Amino acid sequence: MNEISQYQQKLLQAIQKVSKSITLMEVCGTHTMAIAKSGIRELLPENITLLSGPGCPVCVTSQGDIDAIIEMVQIKDIILVTFGDMIRVPGTNSSLQEERSKGADIRIAYSPLDALRIARKNPHKEVVFLGIGFETTAPAIAITVEQASAEQLRNFSVFSLHKVVPPALEHIFSDQEIRVDGLICPGHVSMIIGTGPYDILTEKYKKPCVVTGFETIDILEGIYMLIKQISQGEAKTETQYRRLVKREGNLIARQAIDQVFELVDAKWRGLGLIEQSGLALHHAYAEMDARLKFNIAEKAEIPIKGCVCGEVLTGKIIPTACKLFGKACTPLNPVGPCMVSQEGSCAAYYRYTPWKGSNK
Amino acid sequence: MCLGVPAKVIEIRENSTALVDVNGNQTEINIRLTPEVQLDQYVLVHAGFAMEIIDESIARETMQYLEEIMQYE
Ligand code: SF4
Image (tube, rainbow over all chains, first blue to last red):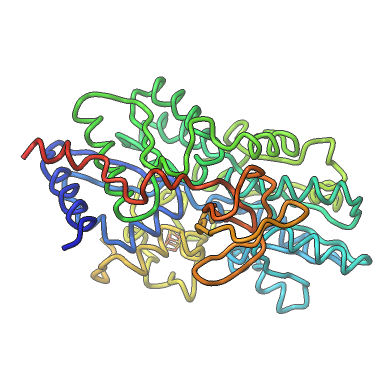
């Protein structure tokens, strides 16, 4: 056994010594995937429960917002550029994939800068970038918007569905129906925002937050740190992912977000309307706001029949408790976004968790 | 969606861009968010941008609790 797996074993043994029943939540889709893939959940003793929270940007996008985008791509001469995850998400009557097969011009990009290239090449078309993601992604969009503005690229705009994480964490901590003793905090969001926002939460709710990396050993270490705090009656912010996360985060990235976006109230699937939790383009960049440019009105929330994604996203139920899980709803034939997105909890459970085929 | 990959900077280029190596593949990224990055440093890349410089002085697997755990035993 090498040093690392020995250490891993030691961490696990230390975690297993705690007899108290403890529930931890991760709030990052990348953690959801890493935990499912590594089998950590199965390795932990029964008294320690790991829940997944609202950490997948595609999953927390409200149904109304998805329907609004689907309406927008039907406008003539629009090219929608998006990250791949969005394409199969079911709206009420259609999906982007379906619209594409009917002729809408929808392109998948890895970077928002690709959308600028497409806009330069297609001056007679309107190129809209679908901005989705948390604070990790927002700075990339912010720099792209600044670049488009500097170039006076008039056929480029952004449909912003960006959200910020701390208000959702506050929602989790303050919901009496959700039992969470500590949070495994998102490594890459924290690399941008720093650890200050967690100090406010730990102080107010007296529950620990540990910013954690994504290797198996990082996650075990993060869990160990949380359990140790809980056993000792402590509740503070700690950083396990020290090789990347600084206390103040990335100041240049934070500044870019502040310059280009402003905080607005936003609807989250499963969590409802959360004040000051969304990022809309600042009025200085209003001409690049696709919602205003194409006059897209807000849409009503029409729930997906039988899908309990909302409860899954707040850790109230686990995916296998959904009646459709693995039957009517599979990654090939997803009913809700939590099964579409690779990092959705339902998809992660379906792919990696030993599952007996019974929806208990 | 917040997935990031570590990449090694192998050339700093004009207009806030850099050439990086990700597991043997070379690609150009934007370094506006990490202007102080230097050759041979590792950065975390997300959506075509270097988001932060990785501090290699803190080892990848830190093992920060090994001694503490051993003491319990
Ligand atoms: S299994 Fe499918 S239908 Fe059930 S909650 Fe998950 S995404 Fe929704």
